[in-house]
Every structure is written in structure tokens, then in C-alpha cells.
Image (tube, rainbow, N blue to C red):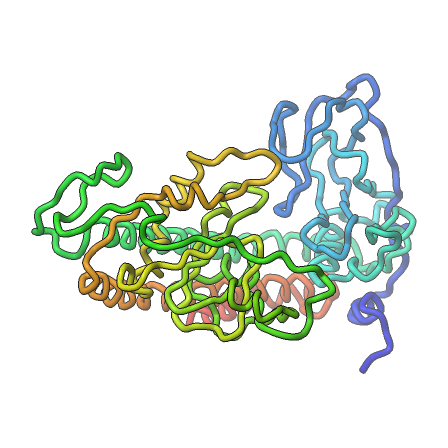
Length: 443
């Protein structure tokens, strides 16, 4: 195992001599006094973009005269809370504008610097998590002084430009392919949701007579079905609140994440807690139970269901959840797995719920939720049909997600190899190596 730090291991890859970043850049902070500049920019995960002064997305400032002015060709860094990579940013500034005073601005200090190349270089360090181990302080921040001491490679200016042009071109191609695949995933998920919604509210037999459900947003239902409020189908119970010291050993604990991430509860949950016999009886998790996410920062994360298809012995469930336990012979568990995924139910929660500081789903609201209930035999047929349809879509989704993951890895590897000099970009482009890599992923 290497004794070198991640930064030292990264710097060992450079094919050129190296020096501290202060050899090519300087830190400068110019405050926007008197609103000298009104063109606002924003540093996002996708780079630096234009943003209107009155845009209400993200954190806002009541006084843009405290912002700092950036010039075209500057580099901008948000290097705070480094333990969480998604809060950090690295960007190339394409035009003059203002951004947060919390950002670090580096401007070129040498005619031997191509800012686009050094943007790609620092971005390569970012996606390799190099900054994350460098920060200091409670929130693991990186200072301008730290950044100016960062070892950078010193290829000649023509090489810098060639690499920047190469990465602009090659990453754009990969990004376009990833975006197409993400759009395809969105279409698949929309199709899946539409199929589930149609079948669990309208049934499988289009020729069966229908009747009014009595609920506007559900419309008609098959004549053999019954409309019932959830409270008449079973009981609801909030989960148990457990102190942090009780975690780590003991009995299975169904967490918020276990429900939010899975439409079917996993049999082997990772969390363990100390719980009493009485708690394990009161907060048990049995076949047919449906656990709903109860509280969150946003309404969109409320009411996600996960169905227990096999009892989890000695388990208890978290206080951020509500357990719905249906009465015997009311709901087939496999039918419940799909029925409560119907997005119209979460729309119902959103309309009825009052959002204060946190969104919270109450038992009384959950019990009022109207549910179309087919006869048990038809529930089983619906579950059989949806399991087959879902399996086909899930297989395609899985393959597409895997393809996106591999393309993302290719993009990161290509950037890292180019900015450290591990590949000759001219030869790589001439031989069509990116196309070969993409074709292999597609296979």
C-alpha cells in the first residue's frame, strides 16, 4: 500500500514537469461595489452559466454589491464542505460577471497559461476526489493559499490548447450520448408508471362494465371493484423513535432509506438496534405490511411505499415511517406492491398536506386515501401481469443505467489521462479511440 497522499499519487502521473499553481495563476478578489457589474453568473455542477439577478433558484443574496467580479478566462472554485463532493465545484468563466464572495477566483498570471486546459486539469483533480482530502477546519474548506500551492503540470502552450480542444470535443460527444440515455430512462419510467396507474385503477379487461368511483381524480373503475378509504382496509401505526446509542447491534431496523429506495422491503436490512420484546411486538414487520415514508424536507419524498412480501423476524421500523397493516383477505401483498406505487396517491398527499418546515404525512390523512380494491382473485391476476411487464422494463432500465455508469467512468478516465499526459490526444483522436471505447460499452 502506498504511503503517498492522494494528491501525491495524482501528481506522480504528470508526464511534464510541475510547479505550484501560483507560477501560472494568482488569487484576486474584486468586490462589486456600487453594483459596477450586473451580469450574474452561477457555478453549477455543469459549469458556469448565466443567471438573472431575480432568478429565485438556489440561495439568494439581498445585496449583489457584496459579490465579486470575475473576468472571462478566470477559474472559479467552490471548495467548502469537502467531505461531500457534490457541494464542491470547479468552473471556467466564459464571460465577465458576478458570483458569490465565498468562491475562490484564480486569474491567469502567465502568458504560458491556457485557462481552458487548467480548468480541465483542476476538474480532473475534482472528479478524482483529490480536493476532498486536503481541506482544513470544521467544514473541511480549502483556502486560496492551499489552491495556489497545488502542484500543476507545465506542458507547453500548444499542448495545453490541443488537450483543451480535445476534451471539449470528446466529452461533448460522450455527454450527448449520456443525455440521450437519460432521456430514454425517463421515457421508460414514465411508461412504467402509466402502465401501473392504468392497470391498478382500470383493471385488465377493457370490456368490463365500469362505474363512477366517486373520486374525480380516479374517474371510473370496473363495476366489480370497491372504492374504500385506506383506514377501512386496515390499521396505521407510526414507527419507533430510538436514541442513537442503541444503534449498531441487536435486531433488524427498517430505516427511511430501506423504504424510500425499495418498492419491496429487503429481507436483510443493514441497520441493527437494541429493542425490547414489547417494541418488537408493537412495531413488527409482517407479510402484507406497507410502510410509507412519513416525513421529509419536501412533499415529493412523502408517501413512498415499500411492501413486505415476507415477514422480517424481530424487526422494528423507524419513526419517520408509517406502517399500514391490511386486514386479512383485503389486499394481496403483490398487488399492494404495485397499487401504492400509483403516482396519483402521492399527488393526493401533496394537495392535502400543509408544508411548514418539514413535510409530514399524518395517519389521519393516510387513512383518508381512497383506494380502488379489486376482488382478491383479480388482484392476483393484476400482480402476475405487472410483474411480467415490470421485469421487462426493469431489465432495460438496468442495462441503460449500467451503460450510463460506464460512459461516465470513460469520461472521467479520459479527462484524467489527457490532463496528466498519459495519452497523446492527437494520436487518440486520429485512431478514433473514443469511438472504440463507446462501441465496446454499447455492446
